[in-house]
Image 1 (cartoon, rainbow, N blue to C red):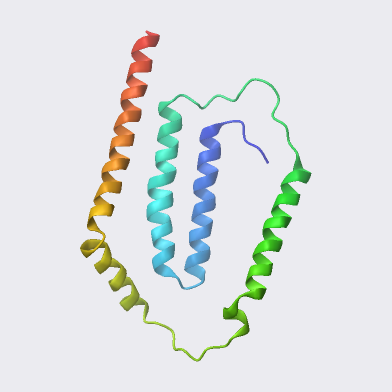
Image 2 (tube, rainbow, N blue to C red):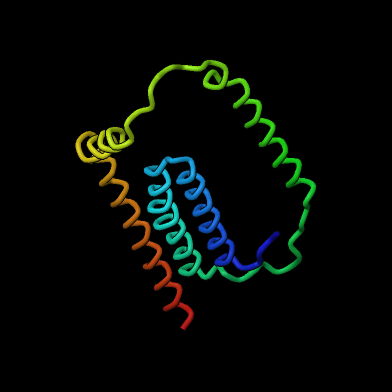
Length: 149
């Protein structure tokens, strides 16, 4: 399926990321599932939609969009074969370990502790970078709008 509207495509990306988060939640990886929803759906997808709307890239390109289902099926088959081969050859599948499962609350507490202690500077720099990118997109959109009038 191909969509001609970029906003619809970005929203479909957000829906697929929610589906991936639901898979994580179904596999009892609650932390990764909620991070997937917060970061990718809540931030990245919305940032993509804002960028599309601010740059006025919602119109479909002129001409016909080619649709080649066979090439997509071949690529999907190759990716699936590679992933299946990797899972079959992995040591985790061939060796059964007797290690008890880790306490999830302990692991999440360690990740949070590392984020606010060791990695606080990269976390703040990324937040500043994303904010600057959004402000830059708004400024570019305002200059384009003033030039059109």
